[in-house]
Image (cartoon, rainbow, N blue to C red):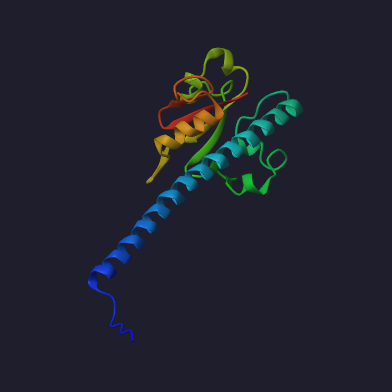
Length: 172
């Protein structure tokens, strides 16, 4: 009959190698999908803030000066307010960096407002996404994908551009 004494060292190494290869592929796919989810989440946050800013403008005749003015009445979705730090009038991005809102009519010295084209400066507000906080940093490919989702993909002009440590997104 058959006698089986065990697997040889070569067979064991081959099995472990295949398992490690599959784990490596899984990690790569997981990290790519995680970045896509973060970009989708940030796009959703931006769209909700854009709508809330327009609703605020209709009600008050001017754009909000900060996110705290939108909290509650205009930003009531739990997905948005879960990211909100009500005391600091900041939100956390999906990369755990800060998000703030600036009305360029009221704060011209802000780095994003300084780089905003004059014709757009008076129209609305700028959403500022912090690029790096402590050890957390938004990867450059993610910034480019986010820019392609919201604008033209060049990160230097249009509605999305960099200014210092901030990614500026013009909310019109």
